[in-house]
Image 1: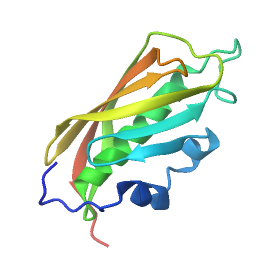
Image 2: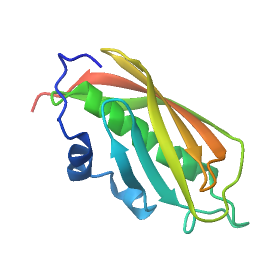
Image 3: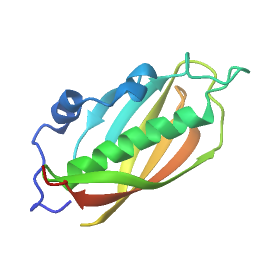
Amino acid sequence: MSESLSAPSDALAWVTSRGMGSLAEKMGIEFVEFSRERAVARMPVAGNTQPVGLLHGGAYVVLGESLGSMHANLHAGPDRLAVGIDINATHTRSATEGWVTGVCTPLHLGRSLTVHEIVVTDDQGRRCSTVRITNMVRDLPAS
């Protein structure tokens, strides 16, 4: 990330104080690590399943978008805003219990676009989903 862009020295405290939004909170998403290099959060399977007991595919996407968008906003700095413009997910395994953990790594951090990959694994460390999100970075609207 460009050093010219302002970022809090304690990024985990920044993201915790900012909050994740009501959807992520309802889903039980918890940040574990948040730094300029990567972001990690976890989410319970219970309460986020399809009728057959598998973690809902959309839940993987919510976890991925929460991580990628928050990390993009850290990169954007205090006078800019990152907004999602594209997201996709490939589900390769189904979690049925415990927690899943998303590890978000930036692939591209530019002035106007960011791209992040989020690898979601189950409690045994097996990859369940791979999410990629692209965010557009914009100036905050004038007040």
